Amino acid sequence: MAGQGHREEEPGHGHANPRLAVETWESLFRAQVTIMRRLQSDPVWDGLTLREYDVLFSLTKGPDDGMRLRDLNAYILLSQPSLSRMVDRLATRGLVERTSAPDDARGTLVRLTPAGRDIQRTTGRAHARAIATYVGGALDDDELVTLGRLLERLRAAQPGIADAVPGGATAAPPHDPASDPRGGAPAPD
Image 1: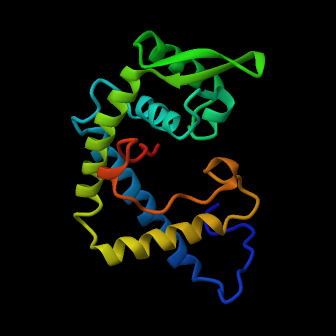
Image 2 (image 1 turned 90 degrees about the vertical axis):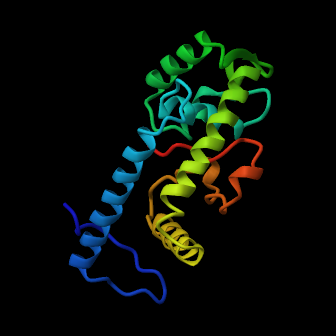
């Protein structure tokens, strides 16, 4: 139930007004849903779904020789069987390939093909421009920095919940998508 549950206090932080916390959560959730609907309706996807793009983007974070499905799954909010089927579809389209893991004959790695890397970069740059328009068009730089810090603090304050970034690393700092060789930001789910 909203507003109930265990909360560990951080030093210097008291308990927030429960009603205000719930209203803020609802506002955050509505903003995310609205922006996601806008992004999904953008003509930037070049025949990809948002989830397929997310797989391609996530593969850019791994080693060049590829990622195991279980490691890729840490970045993607899909069940392992669903991710495996999606990888099969992307492989059929020539965007990814499966290879044997050099250190484990039973293991399989998934990696981008040159065509997959090209479509990810092109789509990623367009996606980053759309994010800059929809988010950056509503908030100035100072507001974006403040929002980013608040969201990171909110994410970090969830004890006992696995981090959304594999390896427990913190989220990457904001960057300039135009200079990013990966071609932009991941597609949130």
